[in-house]
Amino acid sequence: AQKITQTQPGMFVQEKEAVTLDCTYDTSDPSYGLFWYKQPSSGEMIFLIYQGSYDQQNATEGRYSLNFQKARKSANLVISASQLGDSAMYFCAMREGTPSFGNEKLTFGTGTRLTIIP
Amino acid sequence: KAGVTQTPRYLIKTRGQQVTLSCSPISGHRSVSWYQQTPGQGLQFLFEYFSETQRNKGNFPGRFSGRQFSNSRSEMNVSTLELGDSALYLCASSLARDSALRRGANVLTFGAGSRLTVL
Image 1 (spheres, rainbow over the protein chains, first blue to last red):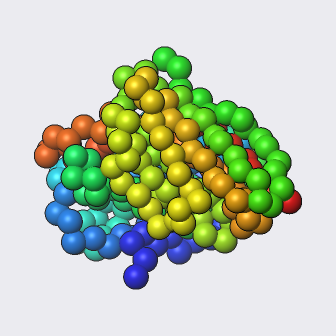
Image 2: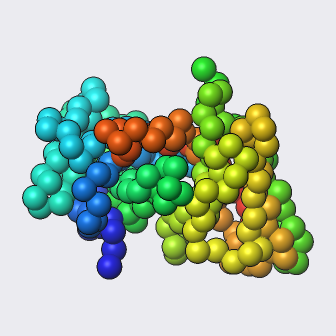
């Protein structure tokens, strides 16, 4: 079974509109972290936002917010007021395990290609 | 603060050759992880090094190996290259804190990647 599922392979959004990128996850570990990364065509993975499994509030970072619904195991990324520079691949990822136990790993979804239309 | 530096950025090899990729982590980061990204398989975890020890390993053949030096810089090596090894190889570093409350909070900072083409 997929640990991280991103069901939207591609999205086209008008500039200045808000956009929601979907992500669902599957884990039995009570302590985990959820991340969103942006990958422009240059290839570098850019960290956007993090949500911990114990965090009570939804994470926000500037124009990015994470809609965390723990019971539904979803962690959707919301980008407000989209800009042309937001065009990129977006990856949802989940971190489980404990570093010193040697079992901490980050699992990525398949990504969503977001294109912002002027 | 300097980011994660990967060299070389691009390289072309032929089948059967070997390749070594280098990664310099962010100063103070002791954990270095490597990922392979291909259009077909997406992002796959290769291995993680911490304090010169391989701490975690993904499901890749023994042709893929790595090491970490005392200054936390890391190298990965692929021997007997195959066409399917063509990929973007991404290195990431993190603090790898083990605090129970923040176990999930170790943000990986990635480098720009090394794009390997095998002919």
